[in-house]
Length: 244
Image 1 (cartoon, helix red, strand yellow):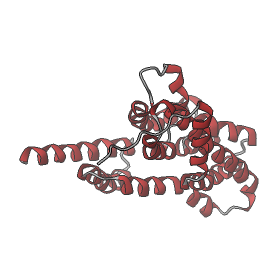
Image 2 (cartoon, one colour):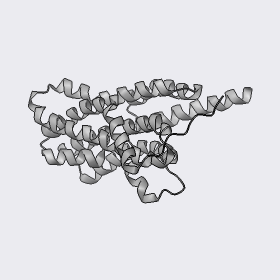
Image 3 (spheres, helix red, strand yellow):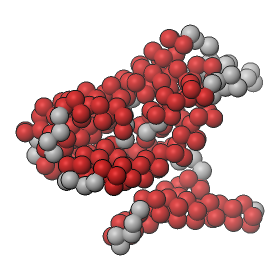
Image 4 (tube, one colour):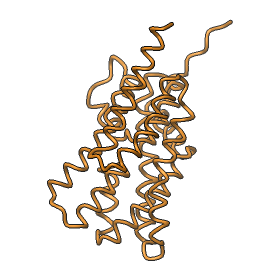
């Protein structure tokens, strides 16, 4: 059986354009568009300007953190408190960055070249990068992921503007539903890509433990859900391997 052929090495510009095309053909572009229509409407309802809403989408680049930012500042919370809350929300993305960067860098990659891929790493970009980057030559993966991130972010920024303009016409329930698109799409993608038993067990335990923590009003419930479910799944995996 012949070995699989290596992906062709492209120019940096061609790899970037390939990432853009992948973003436009990804279902996450449409999910983000719907989600950020809700965020644009939320920013309008709290009295923020259009430019502010669009810039915050670029800088924060995480729907839940942006909701915390808009609702916190809009409710008059102290800036320091909002900054801490947004930062704690962003901590959940750190494991995604840690998982992605070794996949896309080469020994010749400079640290500054990884800044953009790290910033672009959100649920949508992370899932699509893990799926598509292995099909791209390693030398092209940073440029490819940058193109993917720019394409997805362009969809979100455009949707922010659209949602801001439609705010007066969007029912509150519809806005809330749109904000729920991203976590649902992440759940579906994670379930689809879970190949190993430990991954499926972690997902199932997270779905069981998460609502319990939320109902019990446990602080940092999302963080504790990940710690408890992930640790239990890993422990079950090690026990299963030991029994073998």
